[in-house]
Length: 108
Picture: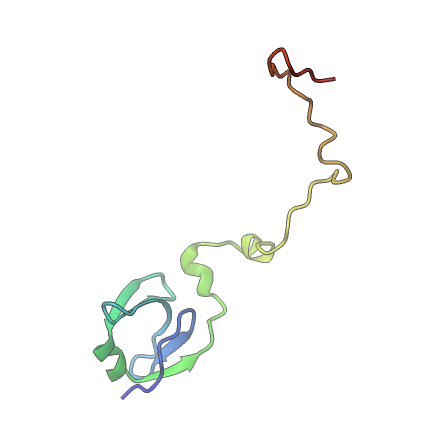
């Protein structure tokens, strides 16, 4: 019997088959646990089935993004923030539009 609680973003390995999967969602209303295998296949366990699985907690595999078809270049810089070259005065390049505010208001 499985005593491990299902946790979103946690990885598990089925002892019998050696298959790795990640829990991606838990629906408490319907007592279901959605999972995704390394190859991208998505499935669902009901709570009773989850409790009958023989599982071990696992680490995310190195190539777990392969199902999302990310290249090495995409993975390398995916968390870097893009900063424009000229951040000294971001409003300097904005030109004012002519605005008609009526007779009572005039822009200088």
